[in-house]
Image (tube, rainbow, N blue to C red; front, side, top):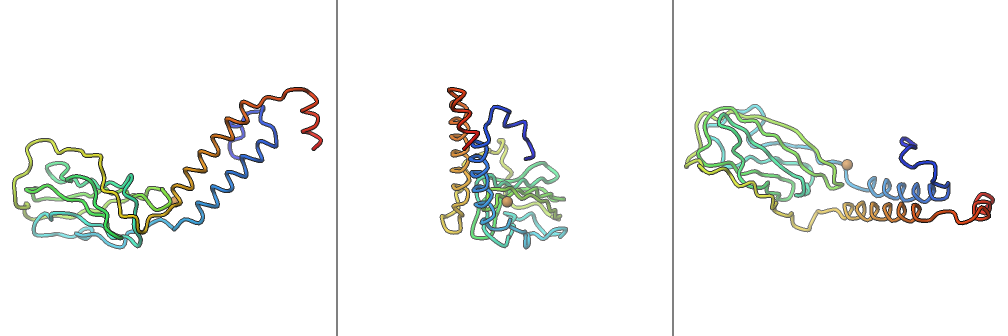
Length: 193
Ligand SMILES: [Cu+2]
C-alpha cells in the first residue's frame, strides 16, 4: 500500500479488501489494453528542410490514437500556425497549418492519447525555405475545442471499463463512509468472521 494515509484508520479490513479487489480489476483491465502508440514517422521528417511550409504536418503511429486529448502545436518564426483540431485517420494524426505561414524553422509539439487513455508526447522540427501560399488569417485563430472524433473502428472499450471502475470505487467509498459500526457486538462479529 503506497498511500495508507488516504484510507484513514476508520476503514475496516473488509472494506479495504473490497477496494483492493476493485483496484485489481482496474489494473487487470489496463493490462489488457494495447501498448502505447509509438511514432513511426513524421511529415515533414524530423530535422529536414522543405521548400515551402506544408499545408499540414502528419504523424504516423503504429496504432490509432484517441481524439480526446490529442493535440498538435506547430510554432514557426511568427508564432503558432496550427489550424483547428488535429485530424485522426487510421494510424495518422494530422494538423493543418495556416496558409501564408512564413519561412523558417518550425517546431512541432505533439500529444496523442493512447487507447488506454494515457497521453504520449514528443516533439520534432523542420525548416521551410519559403512561406506557404495564401494569406495568413489576421484574426486570432479560433481555438475550437471540438475535436474530430475518430471513427468507431479501432477504438478500445477499455476507457469505458476504467471509467466504470472509477464509478464503482466511488460507490464503495460512499458505502463504506456512510456505513458506521452500529454496536460493539457488530464489531466483535466482524473481527471473528
Ligand atoms: Cu497506458
